[in-house]
Every structure is written in C-alpha cells, then in structure tokens.
Image (cartoon, rainbow, N blue to C red; front, side, top):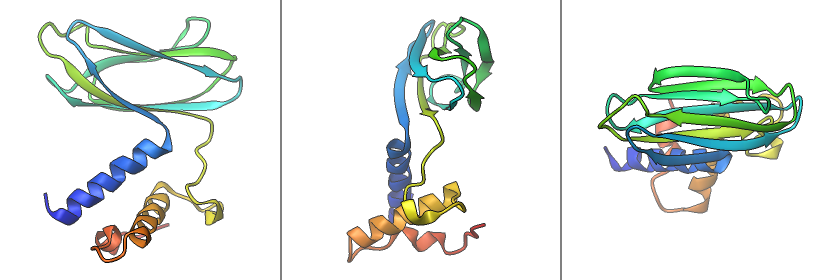
Length: 161
C-alpha cells in the first residue's frame, strides 16, 4: 500500500471511530458475545458489522428488543447492516455468535448508532452525504497539518451528489 493510500485508510478508520460506538473484539471459537444499549421509544438505531479476521470471515448475529423478541437474525454472514426504529423503550441486546465454529476464532468490528447521525460540520446543511462528510473531514485534517501531501489528493475524481 502506498504512503498516500495508507494515510487515507488511517484517516477513514479515525473517522469511523469518531462517528459512533465502534468496537473491534475477539470472538473465540464456540463462543457468543452480547452487547446492550438503552434506546428510547421511536428512536432509530443501526448496527453495522464485519468480520475482519478468522475462518471464513463469518458470524451469526441477532438483535432482541427489551421484551426478548428477535427483530433481526442472520447466520454465517461476513458483514451486514441493520436499521430499526424502537417500538418500545428499553434495553436492546445484540449478539455475535461463533458457536458453530470449533477451531477458528474471529475478530469482529461493529458500529452501533442510536438516533440520527449528526453532520460532522454544522454548516453542511441538508445535502450531507457520507462522502461529503468524509471529504470535509479530510480537508480539515489537511488544513491542520500543512507541509504534507493532502489526504484529499486522491479524491479529485470522485463526484459528489
């Protein structure tokens, strides 16, 4: 990977970590790991996850509402996204399972967002897209560190809508 590409990847990872409750964790073979989050009624939440190392890069994942009802379930997925508006207030549980694997542990990354994601920059108005947010963030990084090759140099060919 070139130096500019490495800086771009590092900046993107930093951006992902700043935007939400992101976590990377080890999931041993034959194990399950659950996380809990209190969500108010009517509030939107989303879960994005990806297996980044191990075996066939797959895990089982499910989300339960406060009453124990399964509102999302996928098996042996490498990655997925799930968005839901909470019908009841309470603690929602989301679990990752590697119980089907007897010899391969996994590393799983997930990002759990509660509510609508605010724009990184307050003056971006209603036309904010993920790409415009990333580009604006990288421009801020470039402005804070004069004298180095800008991270946004490789973004010239991208078209923003």
